[in-house]
Length: 159
Image 1: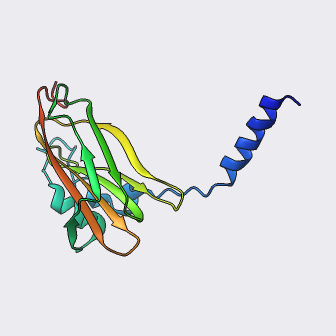
Image 2 (image 1 turned 135 degrees about the vertical axis):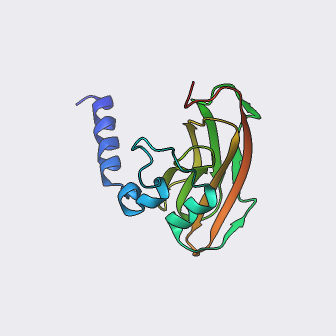
C-alpha cells in the first residue's frame, strides 16, 4: 500500500467517525423562514429580523454582544452576492443569520458541535440596502447577537 493511500484511508476513517448532525429547520420552524402564501402570486410579506428570531427561538431575550462579530463591505456592488463573514468565541449550540430586506428573513442556521469553530463565510442575496444580524444560541441558554447595516448598489432579486 502506498503512503498516500494509507493516509487517505486514515483521514476517511477519522472523518467518518466524527459525529455529524443536521436539523431541518425548514420543516421544524417553517414560520421562521417564510410567511404563508409568499409565492402564490400575492405580494410578499416582509417579516423582519425580530419576527424571524421569535419564530425560530420563541420568546427569548437576545443581547447584543461584542463576542459576536460580523464583517461586511460598506457597499455591496451586487445584491446577488453579498459577502458575510461572522465569528464568535461563545460556546454555542447554534448560529443563525438573518437579513431584513427579503421576504424570508432567516438566511441560514448552523448546528454547532464541540469541535467546531465559529468562523464562517457565506454569500447571501439582498434586493436592497438593509441590515444583517447573526444570533448565537449559547450552551448557557442565552442568546447573543450582532447587527450591521449594509448598502447594496445593485439589487440581487430584481436585477
